[in-house]
Image (cartoon, rainbow, N blue to C red; front, top):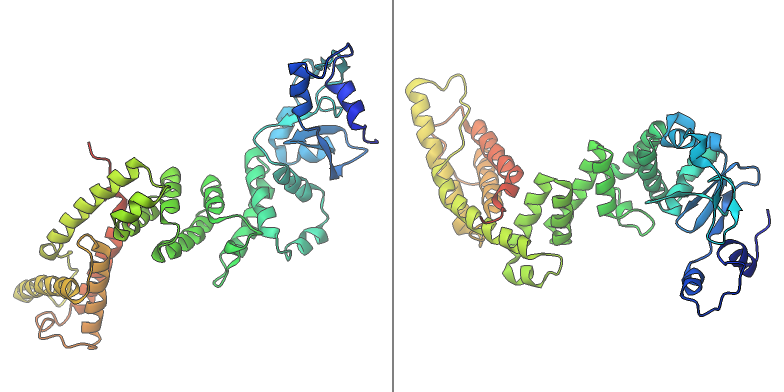
Length: 382
């Protein structure tokens, strides 16, 4: 089917047949609407369904879209009365929805690239799919495919696309996430959350943590983690922003007044926690041989060791008052050095000969517990 000239298309589709002045407001609005264009690949002459996505017309085979009991099957099985002929803005009767360019099925909320990726998966031959896996831009195509197949319930294709994405993003030395050809980290995290893909979400979270540790995109991480309710990541991002200081908070345009209030709240709460921490050693899981009076002395020694390691961290480095993660991390490192005899113990371990390893496990557990609960300290002030 040949393309219509722009003036003919406007005359037949948008304009009334009567005399209309170019200055008519309605005509000016009509002329400002871009004319839909046919997709260069997925507009098949023998197709039987026309769909409009953004400003692109696709003409495809209905049978292809109804695979896997997708949402399109329900869409196409609507009562025929709902698909009767309609009249366009020019008063011209056009056929049922989806049977012509003049009355296409309009898909809302999708992009042409996403729909093109769906059609690629439906029409491509096996060797074409495999060869595409080596293309530089394949991660973006798979991302678009996973999003749209999740929406329209192409479950098998969605699973295939997500598996391919996981294979790409879970490589140990993978750096593709920073390429302009692929989805950005926010998009990847949103997709993993939307599709409930824990492995992919974990891969994205690891990359967020690297950025946060380097003080990059911290405010962006806060907004994204709040929106998706990623509590562990949210706490780490708030803590990292806290350590950058109030001048940075005030200058960052991505932070709202609510964010700044939560940062002040967190500064106070974590400061109080740091003050209590030396007097609250985590529970020690004693060795079976550590019983009776020996266990009493072991607990006393553990309390002193816990306090000493935290004090060493406080006086040894210029840690901020509310940097509870920094203090616990340093205490863990000092305790490990004690056990491995890298630094002198000054008798701190003498009274706990069988529970030294348990002390390290307890310290590591306290660090992990605090990291996972950080978001609870950054709350709104009542």
